[in-house]
Length: 242
Image (cartoon, rainbow, N blue to C red):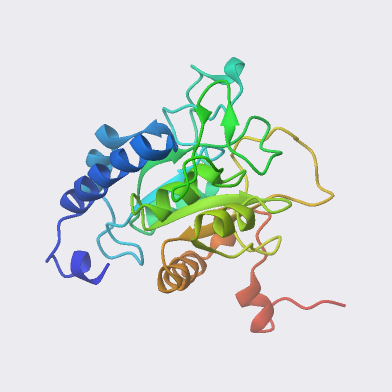
């Protein structure tokens, strides 16, 4: 980010470098659902070069909505219906200077520790092709493990970032409910609030995980999604529990 902020690095060149690695990762594992490179280059030209994620390419689990692209989560009936709006956390990432460039595979319905669907086929483990990368954020984990992306966003109800991080050898942390924006995406179980799904960071390294977490928190995520707790307000006494 610092090199983009100082003008030393060009966000478009960074994006193209990761794009080449991403295609190799997809060839090895079948980890992508949407390749947005054409639009992403335009987004990189106008990105916020002073944001906490200035010029950083970010990969997204297929459940996240990006305007103009499908969010099918493996349902054939949901293909060919590009979204007209974007998930709250996608809007936050854009404002922070990040550049969404690909979406990654999931199992149909999301409720599986593998990543397979009739729409996208089988995603392979990045280290052992005969095994699974985990699920439901399996494509995201496989892409990160092979260096096709440094930072990404997955989602978790009952292990959907934790299992693939373990199976593929990347880093993640499951957010508590109310930490990160979660509205505006696709789901196979609308209205399920017993264990609310949470979007969570996934990264290639532990340092990247800390950087991505701090960057998202610094953007006041409660301003993007009503479900996010203003924990700065709680911390400073502006919110009080009686």
